[in-house]
Length: 245
Image (cartoon, rainbow, N blue to C red; front, side):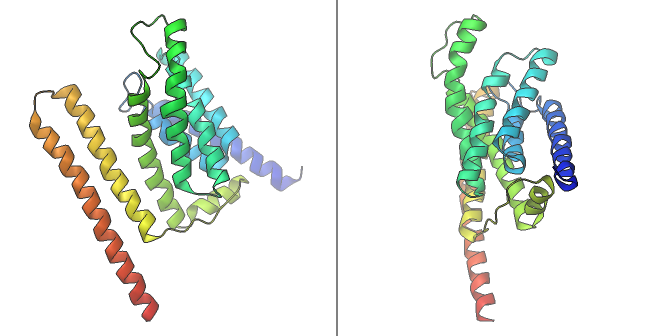
């Protein structure tokens, strides 16, 4: 191993330690049992920058630390490790498509992790009244929340050319992802839908008898779709104008 490889390996370990520390510190944000959106943000960012094995290690370390210091149940592991690994695998299998990194987190955590959580919580924690799909809704909502933020964050890094430089410095596989108006518009619309879901969940938890909040959530979704449409039209016209010039 030459000096350059040793330097990149050391940088990966330092970055991994930083991601673990950040993941533990921000984990209480918006957290309830079965929902930890910030964990999914960390998983996807780590998968894209370091790859599936480092992301799996990061999720495992964060889960162990949270369980041992914060009294979090085993959901800290079952609700993170599957999505972390699958996110990195799909990102590389798709040749660097950020949407597939998010999809891996949603499927790995929102479906696989949620189903695995049932026997773990029922047998190890003696929780009653659970079913195989008990954690699926909350896990899916959490992955959509954290995944949408990670998608917007990483896409902005990609647009600025920062993401490939980070990957090169860490010695991980780098891909050139195009940022077409359609994909960016889809991201905006998806963000609006996610915000709509978040408001609906909070509405049901905090204001179950306030129908006005339902109108607000629907308005947010409609605004997201409208903003996406306007963005797509504006960027398409701009590209045509630049091409003619």
